[in-house]
Length: 241
Image 1 (cartoon, rainbow, N blue to C red):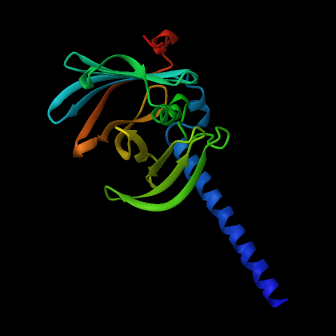
Image 2: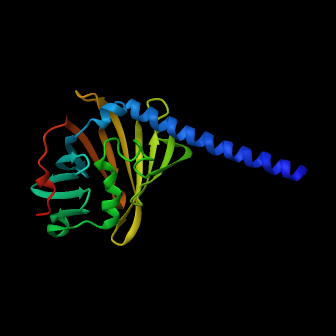
Image 3: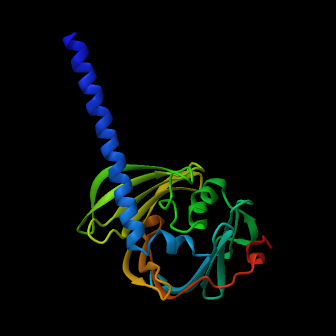
């Protein structure tokens, strides 16, 4: 009987710890969503267009990213006249063009890459209304990110993508993401750090500076120049040429 009572207490304590963790995850996510504009405002976003400058190893480029929420995302990077294009759609997977890798015509994007990118097709990404979207979020403690003891949230998306969000416990902005990607038949992790958050005229808060970790120790630095919310977007731009 004593052993039974101990087992019941242990089970109750374990259940309570899971409940606390679930509440903690939701608290962190909710504070993050509130920090970047609030659930209602973010859900009212129909489109997002970002123009930015890029730099890698002294080479300059310009980029434009256009997202029509629920439909598609198109990013174009112009390196001295050579344009790299990546497109992800909600219902047709993705496609890409990369003349710098000898790919001068549009080709299907690897399925894993397209799945991972689908989270950006919805306002608030993988975290907003994560359960409704079929995503799972787990609190994995705290880790140091450039001197910030950030909350680490591990996300498994409905499509099977795996990524981690590191959230500043003071501002509740995302300071870093790490995603698992496949390149050249090998699986690797790609990190992106974010800073210089600013509020747009619409009231949406987004980072204006980011650094993307590339293979062979290179870093792609991105500086946002212009952000437009709810601009009219023609869905034809997502059609594979």
